[in-house]
Length: 259
Image (tube, rainbow, N blue to C red; front, side):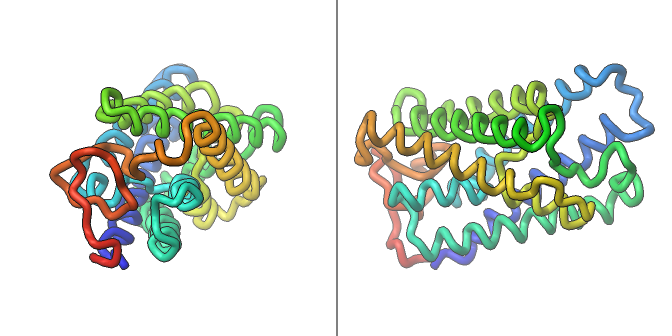
């Protein structure tokens, strides 16, 4: 059991949610002075992409693997890289972190977070309705997991994985936020929906990310073999103990029952 890592996973998503809430209020709130929806989405994408990179490179992220997403954790469980109990508590920590992050944001931002143009940064289907949102979430999740698996398991590219993730997030927000709100993370969606009281199409944000990431993992394994899934970290950090069933060269491994 790795209790500290479960807390880290929750703290990472809380960090992401606070950043999302603040950026949404600043860019999309009634008091925003940023002209044009496209520019607002572009700035939002950059803000959240940079936030993701910072989380992955943080001491917490390097230690826990920086999943902060149940779909990513469950994909690595399916690939045999994380122990079942660890995966279960990672997911619990992530959902708790999503709720905590939005809760902290509500305290800090007050009524500005509840205004109609912000709505606690909730994710709901947009252009194309539920079908459009499902397709967008499925595509985004599959591409993200495919890029992560390919880059993190190639030694010459592994150190750039976090930046690939950041670039994808920035583009996802710019191009797909009008379609699905951009989530690909069940815990992120629940965090906002619980405070906004808006659960429109909630199942999309559970099913599509899992299907997309599981599908990408299946394609990767069929192409390269499961033995080529070396680790479950999103950033190689040889100086930090690895809690996973890891075969990445240079990683310091620990007793899988440690803390």
